[in-house]
Image (cartoon, rainbow, N blue to C red):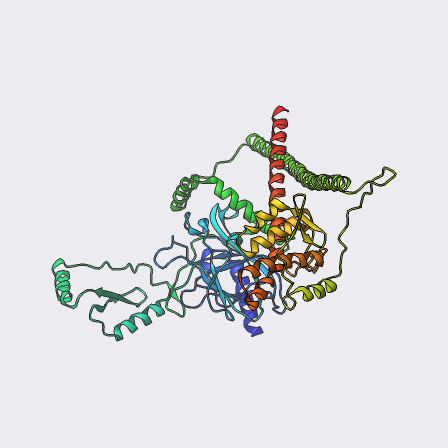
Length: 574
């Protein structure tokens, strides 16, 4: 194996020294590409290219750097000006080796590669064809190759033992076609007739398929004989000196000149450019190619006219003064672009800082709103206590402090809820104490009599429980509490909220029990409906928090719009 690789390396050196178009004939056959001057034992990462198989096409490989290779494809048979198809394999790769392949001698200006198409690839362990990512494929005019169109694609090898195969698109070989036609012929279909029309220049069968009704086949053959249809003969000129490969395909010399390093300024094998620099160069070339637009067609026609003429006029020489003016103008434009980019970056940073300030301002507004609401509630509580407590003999009035619900541990809450759940049904209470426009629900809880009568007319246990919870606790208390005091499992970093008072939860269950017991006497149904109290209250807490978040989001968007309008007005004024 090593001896064969060394022979391939010697063949590459001999071809490079020849430097002519006729030095490389036919597809590459197990060609190992190594850095110039390397004479050691082949190593992993010295890529081996092969195209000596059916539908394969790769005529030459030039080593540019350890991660970049120029590939030259062979023209079609009997059409040396048409170079599009490529199909080759790569082996002896190194794991995580990144490469860039440049197909440098495409003959078409308009290609689907400009509209998002990408080559296909497969390997021995993954035999299904897959397309390369579009972001890794570039199609552009290259100044290093006489401004011909070049297709470059980046690839990363991930398995050392695999043999990778790249192609222009999904291959469909001549052998596969013949197998398919043979299978159709074996089926003896009445409406299908296969005939040998002739042989190609390479002595391959040319088939004529007739698909029609069996009654029309004789009439079709008669019409052919009447019209004396003639099949043009393929030209066999200059076929005497042609060479055939293993599959019988003609090996024509490449119709391009070898890209020399000293002529076109391509980087040598000792180039220190990084892979990122090469990718950046490809992106710049692709962008410039898109900007050129429709002017490429006229340039292609001029290039074709120049190639057709063997002895054309010499290239025009640009005067030194004009060249210096162009260089100076180009540098000035570069400086202007750089200045605009810096200004754009500065503006972007300012916008980011303003967005952060707006976010902080929105959070401050929310906190101020909460403090204002809390202050208003405290004032209401103080006024209510001042008006309801009796006066002492010395003229003073006792003011009770607002009772703060104690934060009870989740375990105790669960224990108390278990005592007040379905296993223990509360005693029915059909009469509630009314005093001064208020209804006493028990446990020192008073609600407005008008609201209580409205609650009695509510349809459904869910609405009744949710409205009763708002009447007892209020929305401000519910949004900062939970039923059990245990953190939710839907969010990883969620913190537990203080639980609701078990005594008030008991009042809610008793009220619902009174309502349900009036509707049905089935104990199982009553127990089942009372078991959903916690669920209804949890849903109400979630609805309150959701509405608060939506309101904050709308206020933030409004503030951002107002700030952006002010900034635009200030900028226009400046």
